[in-house]
Length: 261
Length: 81
Image (cartoon, rainbow over all chains, first blue to last red; front, top):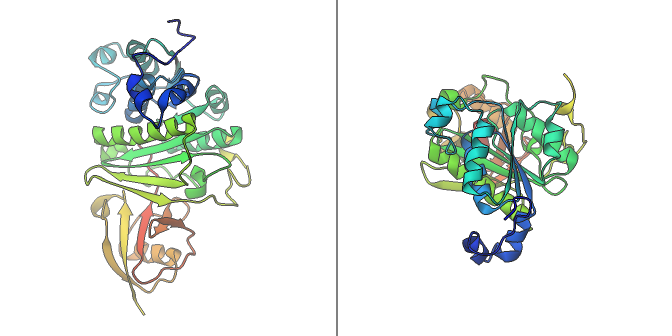
């Protein structure tokens, strides 16, 4: 099958099509969809793998880093060969994803995300899934996605805990409705210092992908909530969230992170 | 009169990390007053502009009232990924 005409049906997607929540109609919507995986670390690896297997028609995988040995326990797309080759993550991810599903388009982008290029990146897909490892990228993404009216799915992981928020601009709260500013560097712990359990990252990524699939297939909206996860205890708690009318981003549309410092 | 509440610290550093239901007595009238009290009493590193409070699993403004029996969750966003 040519890569430019992803066509669901048949054997590959039979289990997803059998799922009444997706069905053949949902699978066709996924085949016509494009997703930007922004960051291909522990979250992005799992997201990209699940989205490729789910038959998203076009996947753009963006990352600035190279694969390193300490990535292998938590970043499930990569292997020893990528470490030895010092492969850029986006390119190593694309190779692996093409082997997983040659019927979809995979576009690797080796890029350092900045205010200067985020809007172009966001413009390339129907939805953005957050695989970033820093606040700067997420607040840039929030501005760019809200400005473009494009859905994105925030996910963060730390230790054995995680949180997920599907941002539907104009419908529900954006990241800045909840967290006005990114914490200053060093103020709060990071995975570098605090560690991360691989299963926690995959759990967070799985919930992000589920939210993405719900949006792309047009599943009924179940209200605004931020999910908090603690995989060590096996608990997931939704916290109800509302839009902030005077939010700097989605309320007043003052996209300050997109402006040059 | 002191109110008996429970506080959940979601993903903070050190010994308060992951504490689910920390019994706490307070005279704080609002989430903001509670945060200021906990900054002093428990040295939590959160401030209002980088974090969020939820009362009984619903996000609230920092000036939202706190009542006896409430379950307060304090959290900041995660950067890891």
